[in-house]
Length: 63
Image 1 (cartoon, rainbow, N blue to C red):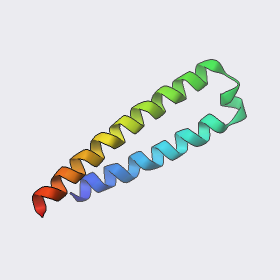
Image 2 (image 1 turned 120 degrees about the vertical axis):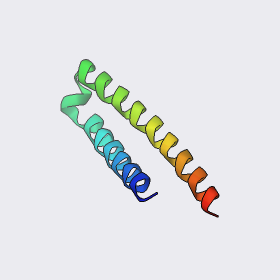
Image 3 (image 1 turned 60 degrees about the horizontal axis):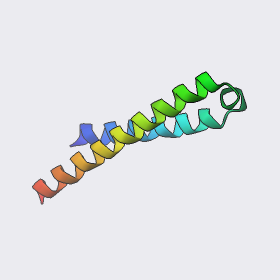
Image 4 (image 1 turned 90 degrees about the horizontal axis):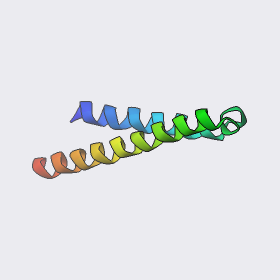
């Protein structure tokens, strides 16, 4: 479960970094870069949701 918690933390950091990148005027003004970062952000959020579901399931099994 420790490894999963680390993956969750890493994914949360990635989401934070992508959100900051999207707010960068240089990226925001470039459609191609913005589109790429938004896609990465969507994928990271989906991955985080899956990891959180997995963590909740493991947590229930340990209870």
